[in-house]
Length: 200
Image (cartoon, rainbow, N blue to C red; front, side, top):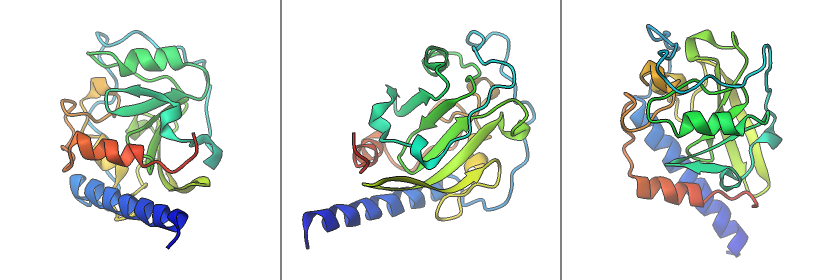
């Protein structure tokens, strides 16, 4: 077996394992989820964003490059497709939370992503669009995208996990944000991140 084929098989195994673990973490919820009781961040959170009224960003497969090209914040990677990176990083690095500006792209692992869309795109999900991606050495392909209906390869509902985040964290899950804990450690997450097959 040549090295390219071996790398492809390794990446496929990592992809399947990651999807299975995220499915377990989210309880395998395959039905649409209800909106949380409140979705707006309190006034005491991070400073206001720089989003322009009616501004929006619609991703294509080409949007999703190797996650290591973006800014690493704690355990996830982030960028802003509309040039609001400073505002995005201010919220991402805040100790109290805040609302991400339109165009923010967040990925924990190469196969899943969330993008902040214009106000009103997904009111029940704080206007986030969720993505499940097929990722290879040739790039990313959007397998599924949308609001509350997006599921990973094993049927885990993205919004069902993220809606558990406390309102001030704008649907972003971390250890202390109120979401269910992932059944894998940071060391495993790093291995999955480092295995991103897309070119740098």
